[in-house]
Length: 464
Image (cartoon, rainbow, N blue to C red):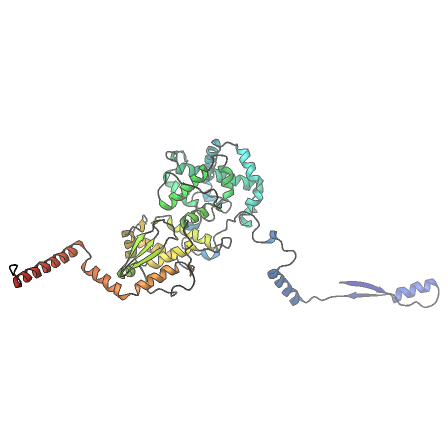
């Protein structure tokens, strides 16, 4: 109802009383009813939902915080085989995503013990550290999915981050310091599962929380060097005596983001200029490349980006980063892949592309065996067949960057198509595959040489 308007007709002549009665009788009320076009209104709402309007502001955008977000595992990976084992913590929860789970409650008392031990060595008390986190809780809370944080008020969430952050740093300190592992309140076997839990996508703390706690416990870069040693051990399997930190490097979003950066290293991006290469490869696996005269060597840097190929006539060398395969490898790479698939992360799929490239080389256990023999792959998982199966499972439904390693693939394809190199390789493999065949060949050559020499001197005696 938009307009209500009264219209009074002209009164007949007469007394005031008659005029009032006449006016009342002739009074009319007009009601204008506007019928809204539902189809038109629906269209306008749809247009506005895409194009936006004056009410749009920075606060209504996806980024509600200056800090990087901590996403959940994307929907497309929910059907991953053994999803719970690969993406959910089994011993300890970090952050709000899995904090409520009953099977993880046993670790809460252990986290409080580690928090107590960590704060004892801090220059500031627990109340000061708690207030630091409370002062930034609005930013920290927005790093997570709203559905996960709405059940906690700001103080409860700040307390959760304090306990999780202190216990996490105490664990890393004990893990990376010689002789300190005895200070952990659980057995060595459990520590390995805790290490895996700390590098799950949905089990992360904003790195800002760790910064606030580190500055009250360590001097200078000591705290960051400790974390770097932990990440280095996760990748390499051994603890370095010392690591260096670049103070000008952009701070990571969380531990998993730091792990990804160290996997990729300081090499240039694996993307190459578009237009190079044929877009497909006729070779299939390591054994086919070996038959074409291609050998495999460990790259010097160990960065996942450090993949190169060099060809020398009938022999080629494919340099690959060393990789260690153990029980935690599958979960680690799946969580890195899940992180790259999230919309909150820049459009970059370098870990995904590396795993897909390695999977293209590994079809059978014999491929794994050859990579082991060339010191490119270290197998602590079990049989070579298990490793081959692992890569086939990780890459299910994955789509790599089409530009990744494109020039390397083109060089390999060019060498693979060279029939001369294949013939030479087959000849060498057939006749010089062992030291005995090489010795037999040298013996035959020497026999021919001396036989020819004897014939020469028979025909042409030395006296002549």
